Image 1 (cartoon, rainbow, N blue to C red):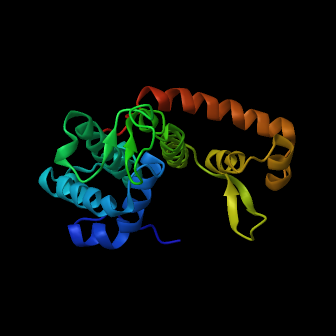
Image 2: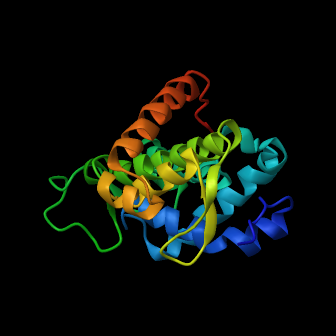
Length: 213
């Protein structure tokens, strides 16, 4: 499968990640942003990418571009809401502090107390956890050589046994006995592989860098 490289220009960013940006805006706010304001937030995000040279400063060794961009999007969206707290007249978003400020909150208004509890931390954690797992799997590819004759995986792929393959199979929520069956080894062998993976995980975690905005 061809790996898509990270965008190097604003045109490439828009072409490859425009839908991702819009989706993250809704994810971060869980829909607490009016559709009419999404374009304004989108432009703020693109402007920040340009002004702070985010594409040039991206380092793939510190995480995936998706995670890197997500943290930027989250920062812009949260800052926008906080700006409304300071001065609602600066934006097109109507704001009330809480649902008790008015018996009838007009359509399209943001209830700030609801937003503070609505930031999708679950999505955020899942994105970071998935990115970390991808990086550790790539680490296993580099530090552990494949062994034994080629085997055929359930999807028809021919490959050799490796710690990266064991970790990949476990990420598919397969149990030890299922991994053993795919690899055509005993469950005891899989437990041995897991012990080696834990050692590598301990060493890997000491040098891990979490991407930040």
